[in-house]
Image 1 (cartoon, rainbow, N blue to C red):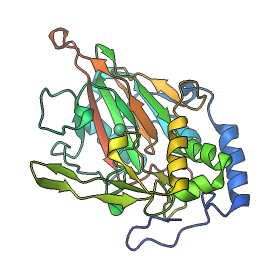
Image 2: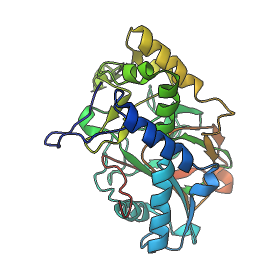
Image 3: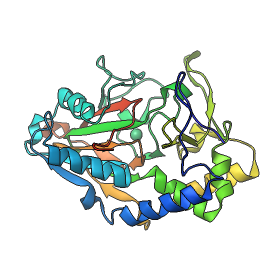
Length: 307
Ligand SMILES: [Fe+2]
């Protein structure tokens, strides 16, 4: 069992995610499932001005995050969304520390769009191909884990580009309900290893081992995952292998817990880095229809107002 801690962090609180704490888990699970939305519509919040949220808008986004670690906002004026809005929106939920990843623009916010031919081993988010289930930054080292994301749609694709989203706390419940040993196996510090990112003989990122599920210093659940087989080397352990198989089984089309949504212009997602994937899409540049999203990744988890 692993509890991820940043240097200087205080000791973890008691958490329902401790595999041996059955009472805490049972109580939390009951509340979680009772409050879990029946559809993504319950997580949608209309926002008059994203730079200055009204208290009711902020509370509604906070409530969506509390229920499903996910909120979908929609700006009253779709064309008002830019990188400054992404930054300000995040700050209203305590999201401050941005991950300046390899491909982020100079301001540490990434423009997700098709950029034509890139180098060998290009990152899939910059193409129009399907993107498999994952959490963001699963390959980051332990002290740079991505706890939250803001993703804003400036322009949708001409066709396709739908996201599917699954609250990682629900993934944890589904596995633990089947067999607590499965989540315990995935909490081992060596449950998975991300192979190094090597391009032209240069190591851009060394191999990175770690758990799938971990508990942060405040008792929250964190998940690192990619469904792409080549992205992860699973520990050669019977339980870990079984758990990895069961994770793949969660992504069935008919799951009532998976929400699907195609972001329109002026819409965006605030999430505590839940599991997500994206369908393939096609742009129509001649018609000015090229998918453009701004994505900010944070080392902070979204703060819920009033908690
Ligand atoms: Fe992602």
